[in-house]
Structures are given as C-alpha cells and as structure tokens.
Amino acid sequence: MPSRRLSSGRSQLDAILGGGLIDPSIAVIAGLPGTGKTVLAQQYAFANGTEERPAIYLSTLAEPLSKILYFAEGLSFFEPARVGRAVLFDDLGGRIDGAGLTGTLDRISDLTARRVCSVLIIDSFRALRYQAVGTREVEGFVHQLAGRLSATGTMALWLGEYDRDELAVCPEFAVADAAVLLSIQDDGQRDSRALRVLKLRGSDYLSGAHAYRVGADGLQVFPRLSAVGTARYELGDRRATSGIGALDTLLADGYWPGSGTLVIGPCGSGKTVIGLQFAFGGARLGEPTVFASLQENRVQLERMIRGFGWNADEPGVLLRCESPNDIYIDQWFYELFDTIRSRQARRLVIDSLGDLAAACPDDKRFREFIYSMLDRCSREGISVLLTFETPELYGQTALSELGVSHLSDNVILLQYVRRRGTAARALTVLKTRASRHLPQAHEFEINHDGIAVGQPLDPF
Image (cartoon, rainbow, N blue to C red; front, side):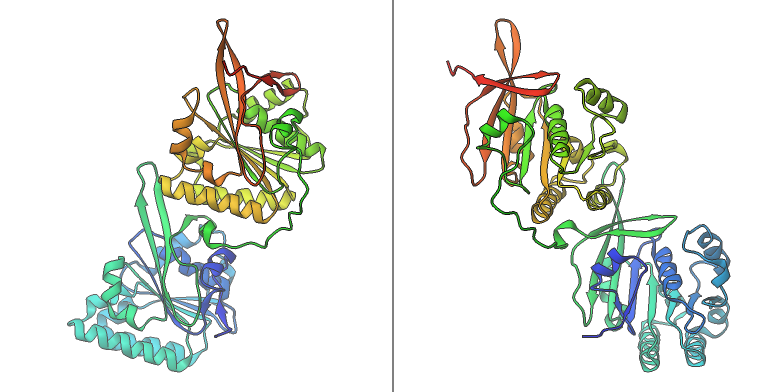
C-alpha cells in the first residue's frame, strides 16, 4: 500500500480518503459551479506548499486568476506572505488561446520539469476541452498529460464542472487515480451539500455521502457517523442510578451504563424535568453531563433549573441551547461529540428528538443518525436520555412512527389520566433491554425536588 499521502489540512476529510490522497497520483475534484471545488483546491495548496516544494495553481478559461485570488484572500487559511514563494499562481488562459491544447501541454510539462512541486492544480480542467477540435483531441491531450505527470511523479488535482453522469464517461475519470464529487441538493428548507469518493486506487476509503459546509475556514467535512468506528468501552456489570430513586426501582435497580433511554409523552408531562434530574443527578455522582436542548432557550432552561433549587452553573453539567432552525445536523453531531470528549462526559441528554428530526433532510437520515449516536455512546460508555413529545395522550402511534424506540434500551411513557375532573400524571416503563421491569403505570408528581414517583394506578 502506498504510504505517502497528500493532506487536505482537514483530518476528517483525510479520514474519509483513508488517510489522504495517494501522493503522487492524479485526482479529479468534480462538481457543478458553487459546490466548493476552488476552495478545496486552495486548501490543498496552502496545506502542502513550501518554498522547497511549492504548490502550483493554474487557472484556465473558467475564471480569471485575479478573481480567484480576490476571493481567496477572504479565507482564513490564505497567507499572502506565502504567495509567490510556497504557493504559485499562474494563468494558462492566454497560452490556451494562442497555442491550443498543444501549447498548454508544453507549458505544464515545462513547469513540472523545471521544479518539483508538492501539488499541481488545474482549475478548470474541463474548460480546456473548449479549445479542442474534437473528442479525439481531448482524449489525446488527457492521456499525454497523465503520462507526463506520472513520469515526473507529480501530484495533480484536476478541477472540473462535471456532474456524476458526465464524469463517468469522460477520459479524465478513466485516467484519474481518484475522483471526489461535490454536490448540492435542496431539501426544501436549506441546501444540503454532500461529498462522495467515487474512486481511490490503492487505498480504502469511507463510502457514501458525507455532509460538508463551505465557509471562511474552507471546506469542513463531516464523515457519516455510521462509517466511523470507535473503541469499545468496558461497561462492566454494575448498574447506575438515574437520579430518581423510585424510577430506578421500576427499571430494576437502575439502568446499565452506556444504555439509551427514550422518554415519550405529551406537552407538560415532565420529559424535560426527567432529563434535568438525570443530568444533575449524574453530576452529583461525579458523572459530567451534556444537556442539549432544542426546545428551551437558555433563559427558560436556567429559570426552570433554579426553580428546582439546582445550580444552573453546576460545573458537572454543560447546557447547549440551540434552535433546530439554525443547525446542520451533521455538523451539530460532530460538535456535540467534541463537547462530550472535551468535558469527559459520561451522560448525554437530548431534549427533544422531534425538533432534531425536523432538522434532518429525511426520516432515513434521522434514523441513521440516532442509531449511530446511540451505538457510539454505548461503545464509549456514555449513558443517553432522549425525550420525544407526542400530541397523543398514550403516544402509541407516535412511538411507532418515530422509528427509534427499538434502538433504545429503555422506553418510558408519560401520560395524563383523568381523576375527578383533574389531569394526573402517570409513568409506565414500557421496555428495558436485558433486564426485568415493572410495566405497571405509576402516578407521579413534579415537586421542588423534581420527579416523585408514587403508587401504582388502579387498573380499574
């Protein structure tokens, strides 16, 4: 297996590429205009260019070099002092107009023969075909250039405005050792960007669609959670407390560390309170907790916490309050796990799944995320509590439509029951995996200490 790799400057993208692009090789970066090809190529240039082995960036007919440089100056990784020394920019447009593909081939060959470069970037490679007399000339140019680059051991990135169907039949794809496709889809609420590795000779890679975003820091890629493995945490055979004594009894003396618990119920039934009690109970036991709220803003959440006599500034509990309208689901998950690791958290609360599902492009992606998150947390020994709001009193229909109850180790149903003209609250443990439990409904109250579970309800 080739050992030398070209880094993108982003560890997550390199992980998708099995450690990075093979160096030397020829890689095609394809995508329609606006997908971020130029930004990604500039990342490669500044991540690898040195004065001894500079990165060479060649513009062609698609976009003037002056315009490329103008917008590149707004990127955080762009370093003006390195331009002309470690990163060299040149415009092939005039040479193409004057001498066609033959002159272009000679110019590129001359550049690579005179000095060893870390990476040679041609933007846009597809635009070169507009100077060809016919398809045969394009094919000849592509094969000759590929041969000369291979002979000199030059690492090359060819950028082009290809869609997937066109790329599959063009000569560039045939001779390339790697091909990466960037695409944008409108999911009805916002643009959804995806990066796919179509081929990577001599290396393994993570398949499928990986979300990415383009910003001032360049291209940030978020590998599919289901494609990223983690080490398994040794769970042991000791149960943990939820922080609610009576609930622990219903769960057969607590829950297994690293398990996932789903709390489902209508508005005002106590789901958030259970989540907060789970979080602050964990902090008292020396288990740092991350509480991610997608319903309450920070002012509302802190007011609720103080109302129960808990300390909103408890160092063992980190509050993350975000609107589901402002999050990109892949980025949100990776930032969440970064927070969990930095805090060495042993517990995670997500309140609520319904809002998280609304931020997902579709139900299939949502279920994939939940499965991957619970699997990762289980492997790392992180206990998870999820809440889901249903408009139905008993929630059975909503529970099945959610499609994640089978992924949870414990399922707790909250509901209202009528009693002499009032609505009392009831709690039922519907499921505990690998454990016995008491599936009988119990009345409960919300007092100044949180959830207080009472006696079983009369079935009649």
